[in-house]
Image (tube, rainbow, N blue to C red; front, side):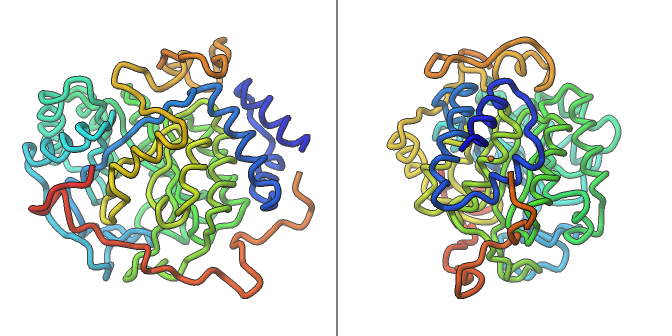
Length: 398
């Protein structure tokens, strides 16, 4: 496909594809899928070699959120039978984080449900960050606490936070259909506050909420413009008891197309395979490693992932290696803080040690890829609520 050659060339130059090119990746056929993966994999290897960064989630406070995000099992009015608990103590959170670091995680992500932190919450999280850093000086800590108020990002940075996560989730045009208690602009503002404070920005999306191909391209192009260092790609976990419980729109093949499109649009950022990979990619998870350079190890916030050892075996069996603590994740031009659209550094030679740091026709395909018999059948057997780790007396999965 001439399209794929064009996309690879642009990815190696960090040049933005056209919207039509991005849409064409999403509308590619199953016969073309391995070619799409191979092309995006070429871009991934040029910037990140065969390294896979491991991240570990610690849910500091679970459930009882006042926001109404339709995809979330912790939302206002959720009937999902998830764990509910208030703030973990700093030593409890540090203990949970230590399990992930022992399993190979390079970054610990501290997440708390809620609209945003109070100043008291920031103090609490700051003590947690300090406790984690005392045990593991080199571990990266990313906070994910919701919408930030002025000055809070600076306080988290001063406490030792390295990054802040706040996802855009979906396109600006459809955001009001997913959440009504805050706006898309609120989310953009929080990411920009984190960047202004000198924190590494982490912002991504959730696919599978009934959005169109155009919506997916819109949100990924918006992320490219916002220029976070890492872009987590989540696939909706349709929890029973949430408004989107019936949205089983994804196939493994569609997930791979989405990941390839993200890699072509954001060639030199840390693209992270996040929530829902086990549910939707299933046996095709190893193929996704050719597109992403980062995954979560073990469990998620309110659902269980596959065993941590299975994650490590999958990485090794696919011919990749876990990124060590002494390796900087991002390419040199990004690690220097100048972002993806400036700087003169070219791509790393494929296979070298970096040491630093997917044209549609006029008729657009439907957002939901249906089989001849209709939409994919719900697979509620694939969703397992987390009952171990943080907030329980059981050992975490790492």
